[in-house]
Image (tube, rainbow, N blue to C red; front, side):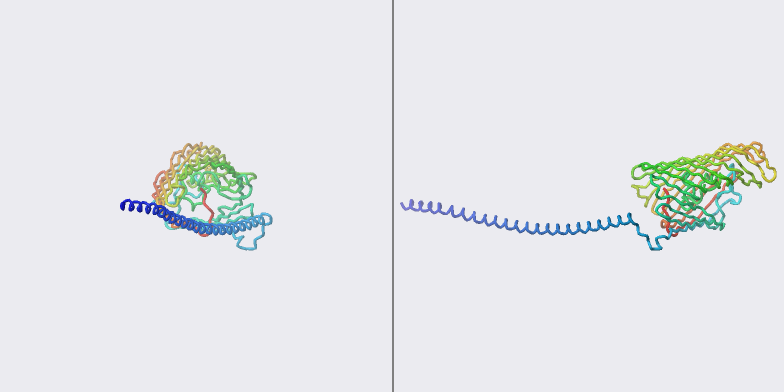
Length: 456
């Protein structure tokens, strides 16, 4: 009996203890849930306050930007409607620059006897220049926009012989629109590639033999030039010029009208991001009258027609379009000239006039590689073809011996900055039939003051 009573008591106690334990567990879980809800509320409050603060800052910034935009728009409208005249004298100051150049030349042959064999002397700037130390050509350039429609440029050249000449003096349109540009005055012709570039931008000390033989250096004239650039992704430039015809291969004729005319077309574009190119065709026609030259101690004269055709190609490489560290430029031009007319031998004494006809050509090809910042190396090959020359009855005194001049040049240059350059050049010049002129040049070129960007 006693055992049954104890068992019954234990069962009742267990039945009462189970609900009490479950109630205690529910209370702890509820407290935990309440605590989590409280923490979440506090966290959301903090985040909401941070978002409200950012919203206020953004509204302030947007308000300031809108105010600035409204002010800028107001200024633009004012400048278009009524541009205020400037009272600053600095506004009217032109851009001025000075090019200084000097050369030391070591030549194995006397430059006084220099000539390009098989080609008529042209009286231009040909040959290697003087031996020893000497100044190069110095240039003083003054340029400025005259008004919103015109720009002017004046270039004064001082030769090593201390003679002064107006190299270029022209006005150029700015606002014709539709890709049209008009230039009037004295200027380098747009034919070919190198002709329009001043000497201090060349990659070698001297001009290629073809330029010396067919232009006497470079072709410039007093006249008018019209250029049109097409509004296309491919670079398309067409140009035409008429001029007085005062320089070789023309002659300074005392007559109304023009003495020379040119046509040229250039195409260009990019290949990927690292390559670009430009190619062109040009034509120069003139009718020289009494174009004199001196040879073998006598003065001769040519009158007739002269036609020069030029093809040019330039290809440039710069990795990812960045030429600062390394870049390469390949450049070449081909010339072919036809002349037909009358040549007078020894105008002062013999005065023998007879037909003269010639078809001659020449080319050059050069590559310049910048192998590290500021340092470049370049190689150029010049070749002229004497072609066919017919002196008629004057052959007995002028001769018809064919000769093909050539020249090889190797140069290194170092440019501490875009305003200074030092150059070392070696050349083997075979322009004269009987000798080879081994040449060495040291050159410096300095640019002072504001200077316009160089052409492609």
